[in-house]
Length: 294
Length: 121
Image (cartoon, rainbow over the protein chains, first blue to last red):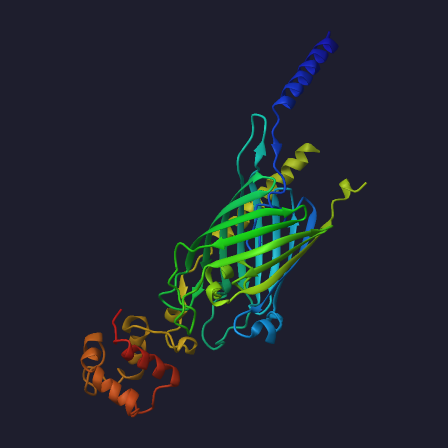
């Protein structure tokens, strides 16, 4: 008798499973090719127990004679080296360091929602949170005065809202909040709010065209130190080239910075003035997931 | 096994929240100019009386030019404004006041301030 009951229950389970199969939603994967569209974050994470090693380069501005005299700006190249690790498929942590500015950045990205199609649990958007803390490690310019550790810190919080419209087009809106603990002038804002816009468009099977624009909603009148010019909005155009285990990203950008606090709030290059930099991102993923290697 | 996975999940969630709090908080709203009004890092900054020039004048002029001290009294914006032509002549053009001289940074700051209209705010 007991067996009978169990058997009946098991049958119900199987029927439920069959029902569920008809209405199951499938996740939309690969909205973007990498964890960043160009310099800014995309909704993509590194898979669980995978380590992503990134090398990002931005060369000097191409304006005036720099495009040949410093060979496309290579003489003034700056680099950011970073590691991103997937703790789970939804949670990724990262650490990076930028040369020249000597800024370490510590980041966390969490997938709040996954875009899903089909079935009764579909969802139109992929939503992620990205937070980043920057630590400026330069020696204090005036060691005699009272300097504070907090003056070294800057923060970025982003809500990443992305949608893969079809296999060829993915779009993203990224409300961004940047905070700097210390700014130069009294008139300079500590907080800058920007609305990041990004898009990725398929060209061939292994290449995509990417565009990224971060217009600032506040703090637009902040001046570049010792200059009468205002900061610019960050705008970049790039290409993804997928080659085996690598994603190679090539771009033109008007910012030398490779972390949000820099390129959102402190971009100096003018596209109209050809103050544009060539740059590239290289990434390589390593797996530490022993369960799935068989 | 499943329970331990859940516990691990909880730990991760807590760690995320903790990190989130660090990222979201920790907010200071410091301005280098106000934090270090006499510092040399922003000599070319355009200041106003209240954002640094008062400190400069108090430190370099008003220690003598005060009520009961030498004339003119330079302890308030109104008094400084009335005497601005004289201040410019002595401190910027002739450079014979203050008698110890202004350092380059303070000189630039004061010069810029007078050039931009010697504003209070």
